[in-house]
Image (cartoon, rainbow, N blue to C red; front, side):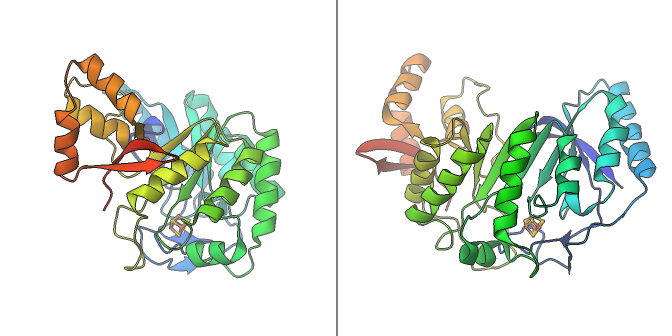
Length: 311
Ligand code: SF4
């Protein structure tokens, strides 16, 4: 099955997924990959499915969803591997255009140094690129790239793509405790993002079983600090911590709403006060969440923040 869903996605609303390559063929073998270790590492682009077969499958799913009155916000290339390895990606995007639905590609960005890959991605409306590190040793440790890949070419390619792309560019940085979560390193990545100017930078944290058992999320204090450092350089920063609660759609359940908001970003003490005042309740509910170990109180630059408990 090439197309799946539509499934709710915090980033893309209702998204119809497109598996344009067979499972776990990737240019990376990230230590945190939830699909396990990469079965087949490769960097040469090639054809996997007939573009017409991709179109037929997606079209069938779109028709079914339309009959059922289900909305689809995005057609999203999000295979269990790296979507730009598909040499027909650009053609598939063109074939899908007449369906009249926006198109997204979630890529690790490893091939963005190649002009043909950039060309293909320019045809999409929303593109996400992985930015785990701007330092070679750390990049090699966390993403375990194919031996022929060069970080400098990826970073240059990303800048070039960002300068041409008319759609919405997102980045995704996975933070792994003790690997890429040092302050200096986070500052370096944030400095690069300031040049890239994505519409949104996501900070992800491993919450599902990773390829390597020893992988751990950073402690909450570090997760908050990373958010603050990124926010100084990028306009919009959000967490992706595997909690797809109904963020920002207030349910009226104060506890649930606090957990939803803090799964997207840390809340400063004054923002919490304001939220509680609007909801007409006191701080007891926050203290209880802290006691239950569901929220964590932490400090940054002399101010108190509330962060979602990760560990
Ligand atoms: S880039 Fe994605 S699919 Fe490839 S190894 Fe990393 S996490 Fe897994």
